[in-house]
Length: 200
Image (cartoon, rainbow, N blue to C red; front, side, top):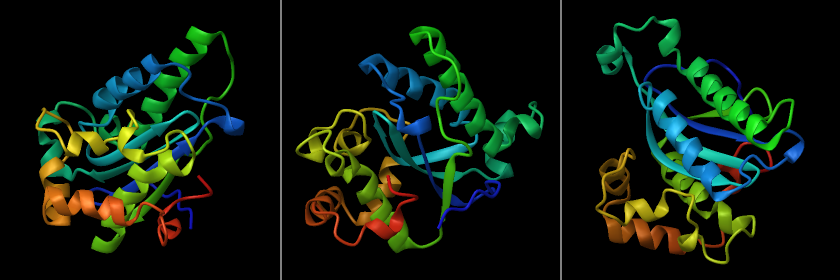
């Protein structure tokens, strides 16, 4: 069920959106990297990130909105400037403006409002991580989800620095090996449909 209420501090959310009229929002490889740079600028100050997958015409992200104590480092900023719902809107607007300028297009790039569903249970959290990582395979962008370049899956297998809450996610699954096995077990996505928003 879609829920477009204001994002609340301290809560986990599945954030998702698609291109307006199902239009592609990522046209070239460089667009994915640019989106993530903007994401770091606008979202990392107000949210922790647990998984993501960016696809040509839509994306999925699992986040936890930081509470007031966690945003104290940004206390010089106004309450409005740290409002998480506004920060996501700022991200999408900044990215859309760049795409419009680069590709000589006009009008809305993303559907509005962006989707958000509260993640209120451990089962939901773990299955949503699986769903997000399996999504590129589900839509036929790759034959095997492990090879997709624009999701967070490979970063969980790496020791490279990341903005993802890697240790927390792996701890939820029990270990890196259990994390990998869980993804293989749910490779057909059976039972995961209930954890998505809309039909994407």
